[in-house]
Length: 277
Image (tube, rainbow, N blue to C red; front, side, top):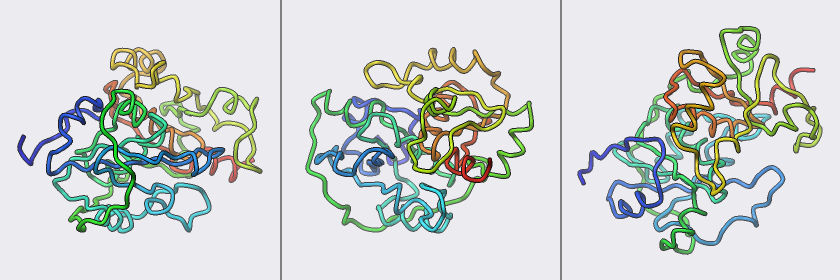
């Protein structure tokens, strides 16, 4: 396999990863974050061989921002990616320990910074373990810096004022990935002090709807059926959730289903619910 190897799909299987594990340009990233109600202690001790930890919360977010996992600057993203040894010719596979939860956020961030040669590992670490493939004890990346260059593509991320306009534009669809209970204000928000509710004119597809009973993303046909039941492929769609993480699961599903006019609302309900009444 040559070094110019391109990943053809935004999703790869554990069998595919096992087969290409020794490719010199392969970079495997673990993007696990504790859920809002979870704990860092819940994280696994082992990892897929040669994995590097992608610290979404601290290294790849603007930590000075008032809301969690806020979109980083081009400069910050480039520096931190270089620190992980990521290069212009890297082939990136990203996974998380919950299956498919935070890994699509990393896939989306790289696309937003102009890098396309990246895929999400379908089923994540649970699928890798279930297949019986080799693991190793976690360790910190100590290798060389990479030559990664970030080039911001602004349309991937939307911010408060963008979404305010979109919420009044019936040609634009806003889809919320939170649970039905949270969307309909039946369940409390997990963040203390955050009001319940939803963005005006948004609809709800809980992100778990896209995941099958064994923890894999549903097939392309199933995803197409899901999205075709609510929108046509030309409509502009913005995905939202609690803090911009699981919105990216919907973006991944829609991308696989052939939709292209997609963006993610970075602040999502945490920001919207805080700034509006």
